[in-house]
Length: 118
Image (tube, rainbow, N blue to C red):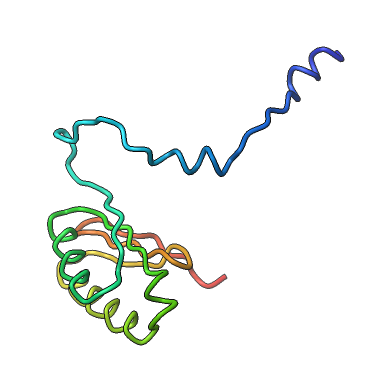
């Protein structure tokens, strides 16, 4: 039984930060058979709004990074998010904050399940 416990409780030294940081290493891949993409994009300036809306209209999901703008100008962030929200609702898409610095924007027919007040 002692041997079994040693095997089952074997601890490995795993650097989780290193592992997670290497998840998005670019590999030579072909995206020809993809129906849609999940695209990370930054929301920093007004022109980013149009790019994000265009990606959503093309059927892609946008993972929007808002952390830089949130630190610099909360009023501008609210304005730009409002513009995106209006356009996304007009095409029957969805938008939701998923973390402190990230907002998810989805195209038509893709809905985000949002937490109810807990």
